[in-house]
Amino acid sequence: MVGDVGGTNTRLALFAEDPGELLAVASYNNRDFRGLADVIATWLEALDAPRPTAGCLAIAAPPFGDTVSMLNIDWSFSLSDLASKFGFRQLRGINDFEGIAYSLPYLGPQEAQVLRASGEAPAGKLATVGPGTGLGGATLALYGDTPVANASEPGHMGLAPATLLELELFRALLPEFGEVYAELLLSGPGLQRLHHCLGEVLGEPAPVLSPGEISALGVRGESALCTQTLELFCGLLGSVCGDYVLATGSYGGLYLAGGIVPRMVDFVGNSSFAARFDAKGQMAGYLGRVPLFAITHGNPGLLGAAHAPLWP
Image (cartoon, rainbow, N blue to C red; front, side):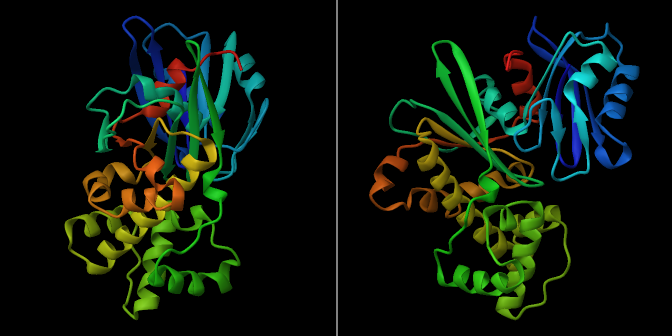
């Protein structure tokens, strides 16, 4: 069993090593369940195959051991208790972005759209950053033939304005929030916050819209305010991703993930994302050679959980 346990949805699947496919893929709205054990029980009841005896769960949670306490949903559970309850001989839990990181070597050409190709062969660590319910990130390094992913929390890194308009937005946000950190603006709720605050700064009414509505209207050019919101979002995301690659030394490639980017891949590619990614002083030349991708695979967390080593 492999799982991608997010703040909003949980996806579970059966991974068949031969022929290397994800089977019995199912997605569940977390709000419909009291906890993860209920989700697993529901999936197992519907499974038309022998019950798996091993599993790996990619979980949207800060660093954890056996006990997992999630931030964006009030769920807490023990991995050993889940293993005992469902008869798993092995059950590993990893961060959700570690799961995405483990998927990177297995993404096909149609599953990671090129935003910027590199003139040099990619080398070194890979990085993934993704805005969704929050803003997560991880790196992937190879030690011999062994891939090792390491998760981090770029969503809680500081965020700095780089334009006069961004400076005005930050001035408007600071009295309410005290600090403007990355996830405050670079997430689903952050996109809504950015849209609302931009309307206030520009003196334009900003109707209450979902992140999906803002993305759709902005990409189609049906709302000037939504389009400008997306442009700001992409620029700020580029700055954060450039900082993340510098901080982690992941010059082999940056992969955008999460629930927001797949809806607007072409928009991101034509935005200031890459220019802001590179705009890091004397390091601009190095960052300009980092290949940039947007993951379009439907379930990279499941794919990565399937290929993560079961040992910690």
